[in-house]
Length: 113
Image (cartoon, rainbow, N blue to C red):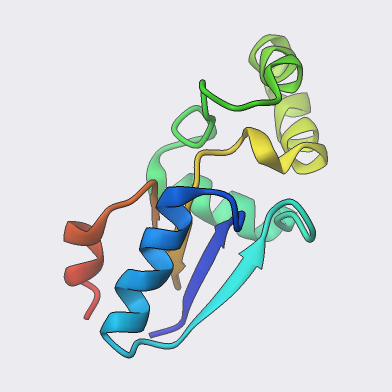
């Protein structure tokens, strides 16, 4: 397994996801969205796995201005704006190869083991 967890250190669900994998001694890579963001290729892969960009957007984000802007942009511009403002994404995004989940989803992760 090649687990990547995208989130922030302040996100409670991200910390719970990290704990889930630590308790099972499953190695993972943590990527802090606030510091490093997410690459276009990674975001595209996750979007395909979860059913599109709308499934990834967090309606409760603290950056409501960026979230509103993303909501009303043309489809081809949304991806670029999300890459500029990765904190509008729901957290954590957990990726295992071509499979991915958004939010705290331990039931889905069990099927990966």
